[in-house]
Image 1 (cartoon, rainbow, N blue to C red):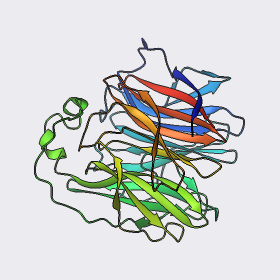
Image 2 (cartoon, one colour):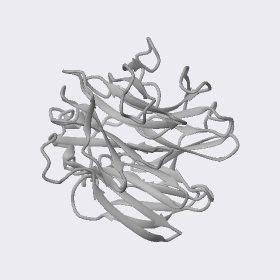
Image 3 (cartoon, rainbow, N blue to C red):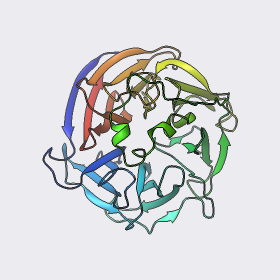
Image 4 (cartoon, helix red, strand yellow):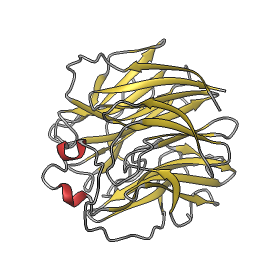
Length: 347
């Protein structure tokens, strides 16, 4: 695979004063070809003014983003867009921390112009159900499967949340993992933003005690054969596989791909090749540059470098990627001040 063309745009002008901090974009393509990007933004991650924002394209130009969903005094997190025919879904988290957040959803029937009243995704459930960061997968049997995870004060765990009825009900299926006890922060190349983040600034040592996997990204290689790659605390991307439409999963195992304990995302092309967006850096809470693409022609057994998108020092993280034929659409965080969009053509 080779890159034929690659364009780069910022979603909003670099000198903007819309907010101080933005992160965790999600990307979707509507039936008419319009692109939508959702992200959270406010003073900084975890603050009570952080809301869900939405931007869309008109032609090839991104329009000014709008503050879409906000509850005063409640932090909003990790929006995930999903297109189901003419219905647009938006899932997002609310709560003071990642240990306490729950999932809400809204629906639009007019391509994101107006939205329904926010509702809990699974009423009465205090777990963070549904997609945690990456997009849903519509499986070949028509069911939706959401890549999900839970972050406690000690262990991180991934699961698949399956909806057989287009989002009306959800069923949780755990991904097994052997947890480890972590007791120190031996790290030589820590992401500089860790200590400055509102969530961790008072107790950086605490975050190095967490262990496990979160924030999966999914693909289907054949009928019922579902796979996931996961962010981990262990310096490598982890993987699990299911042969029964996500009902049961192989115990999570390490891949050779490095991971800096930051978000990843994957898209499957129409010919079965996979493209992974990630930071090719190891270490727990490792630095978040560069951000790159790799590709696989053997269902993720091996990977080859495709493109380094940002190589300067900084934070370039949390990619979201979708495929349209041989065109890749991609967004990612740019130093917490902007969201970058890239349109990449491959052969």
